[in-house]
Image 1 (spheres, rainbow, N blue to C red):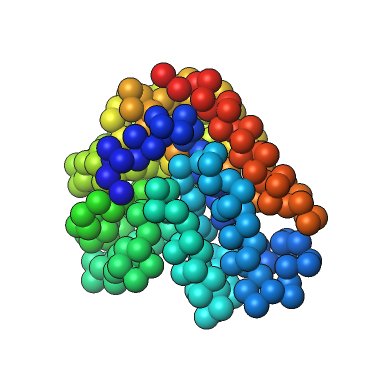
Image 2 (cartoon, rainbow, N blue to C red):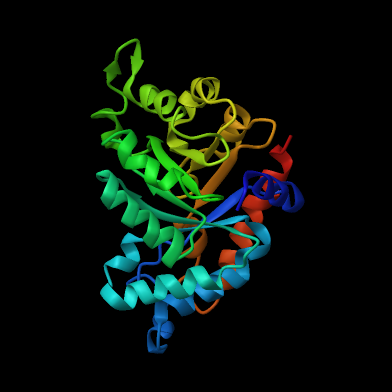
Length: 267
């Protein structure tokens, strides 16, 4: 999916919501466990209930990889089921030497046909560029994350700024706003103004709204640019809104609430 297509979908639907399919088989409603593929059946119903209120789905691959071959099959069926109008993200946080990253890129961009993948930048340019070589695909680089461990490296001094700032500005030279996004955690709202000044044109994938307590209003005010430039992710708050047989209906209702709030913030 191109940037123009993504922006058009955001404008058309008046939402920049990403629904995170962090599907933990131990948390899905028990009645689904009799299904041939309980994870996919859960995802299918969530997608059907939320697709009108979001522009993107993010699949956290760890929850699928943990289930071995069956998990990979569930992930493949899920990404194929998502409507083509929606931006698909493999939240895999890959990053390795160049020839290994080339295989990761092939796995997620060709075999599984995701639109985007999250990538860890620690090993530098040659570990990231194989992902950026794909046309109309996106690399979403870890920038400033919302976990407590961000203090260990990301927020440490590096030259005239902080390490995460160096990551943002250096990586901006590897790709363009057409194929490079950044992960910026919603709980880091105080930093969004400075981050937007450093990378005025890039999109941000923003996890941490909902269960982790990030403020959608604050993020939207500080980080939105002229083309919106935001994909705000909600996972547990949406998909586990209910543990009963009404789980999909409740998920749709929560997604709709986020979408309606976002419509009020759009410039």
